[in-house]
Length: 81
Image (cartoon, rainbow, N blue to C red; front, side):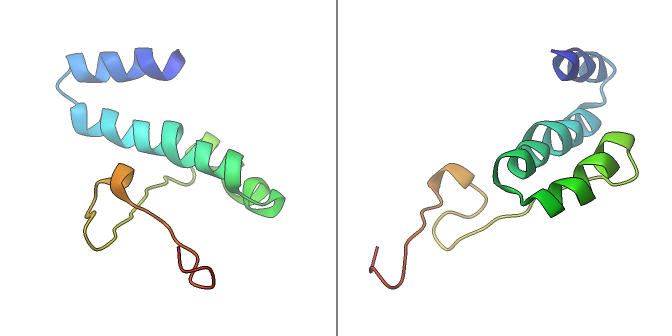
């Protein structure tokens, strides 16, 4: 809820680019680390992200999906799928 309020206020001030960066940093990358990161990665990156010493970003692409993350598909080469 805190992020939502901050993002809403930034948008009202025509600072949508900053709001978008905040969403990526706090709502996407942090959750990826919390859910999928090792304990060492969490200890290294999450405190820095919380204090603002590190600003996170994400970049993903795949042939046929481009930047549409919902259309990215994975497969296991050893299983052929």
